[in-house]
Amino acid sequence: MTVSATATVIPLARPEPSTALRDTRPLRLITCGSVDDGKSTLIGRLLWDTKAVKEDQAVTLARDSGKQNDLGLPDFALLLDGLQAEREQGITIDVAYRYFASDKRSFIVADTPGHEQYTRNMATGASTADLAILLVDARAGLLEQTRRHATIASLMGIKQFVLAVNKIDLTDYDRAGFEQISNDFRTLALTLGVRQITAIPMSALKGENVVYSAEDVMPWYDGPTLVEALELATLRSAQTTGFRLSVQRVSRPGESFRGYQGTVSGGALKPGDSVAILPSGAIANVKQIVTFDLVRNAAVAGDAVTLVLDRQVDVSRGDMIVSLDAQPQTGIAFDAQMVALQPEGVQPGKRYWLKSGSRRQRVVVEPVSQLDLKTGAWTATDKLDVNSIGKVHLAFDERAMFDPYDQNRSTGAFILIDPDTNNTIAGGMITAKRAELGGLHANDGRVILSLPADLADQLMASEGFAARRDEVEMRRLSPAAARTLFDTIEG
Image 1 (cartoon, rainbow, N blue to C red):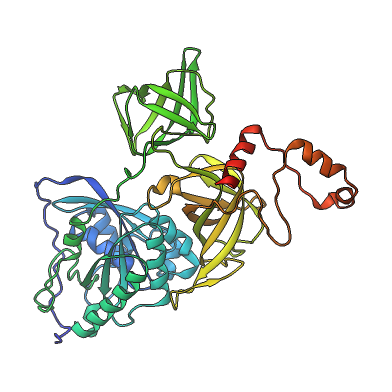
Image 2 (image 1 turned 90 degrees about the vertical axis):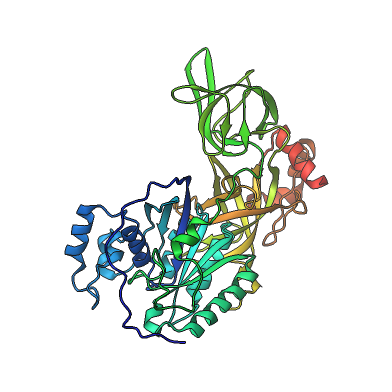
């Protein structure tokens, strides 16, 4: 069934906010998809119709819009595209965050770039989101960049998608075309492990099925509007692991006070609870939980707190304070998935800095496979090129500690830093600990061995070693690190 494209445009009048009770916890969401699919226009329309645009912004929007379209509507994308280069080129480059609210809920939305060269910015927005709005041009269907963004969002742990089939008015509200795109995306989503999908036909420019229903022009669609779908979405929980606090600073305002400051990234804690300090493994009890203005009786995920322990222990920046009975995985070898963000890609065998929370460690990356976005298959590779998504092995110099990303986003995520340029070259997610790597790791004809000091001395005194001394990199382990390495090999 088709309906004429001369349908009445949704009016620009903005309703007064309702006094109905609202969920106080904002839903974080991103818009993603290929370039020119209408991401900025959609969010601009959402802001306008939910009365999140102030009067002075509305005046500026009317002044700057010019003759953006033949419908006499403002250029809603200008509410998001604030950079001069974005306005000149008509594209989104950086991530723009905006706040808006409906009668029932508040939202924080990230408008992310569609161009392939700005994939890194899209990954940044996805890392904190609860839900993804994936836009598709009704005339073009799913594109490679659409698949790339859907894959990155799912790797970042997003399991709720709204498929916004935009510009449906330009296809004369073609129902068959909408259903074909919906079926294609559901097939893709199944390969990504995504089950929660709401497909909505809409016109972001006209506001059809965004905040207001468009049943007059699409009587064949009886699903929710975009705002209604967002109101029903759920928040991602940070409570799937035990207590986690990455120490950012040791506070010593005087001799009588020593506190460990950071933001709680999982679980909950109260005075009297026992905790472990990693990587040392020291155990203590929580004496006090302090904030800038009061003493608290509990700390939960998201709280910025100072912990005071009941005894003196060695804790420094980068250490992690965790629940005694629910600790993260520790070891020197992990599996991960990552997105390469720089033109040089990720080089096999190179030693990078890996930063997770407030902890930074040396790591060697071994690419294993790369995702083919056209077929959805993983193919073997020994290098990750820019914007590619790959599976890798991580080999650390010292003991590392992580939770799997699907259990805790904060303690399961990391960035990779090039020590030569200080550029962030990749963002990644821990998937599992690798027991089989042990203390012997072959890479380009080289191996890493962990030996007792006396045996190492004998080896270095041999003639064969002396002849090739310049090819060897030496590293002396502490007793604690040696025990960890031995436990990993045995495990």
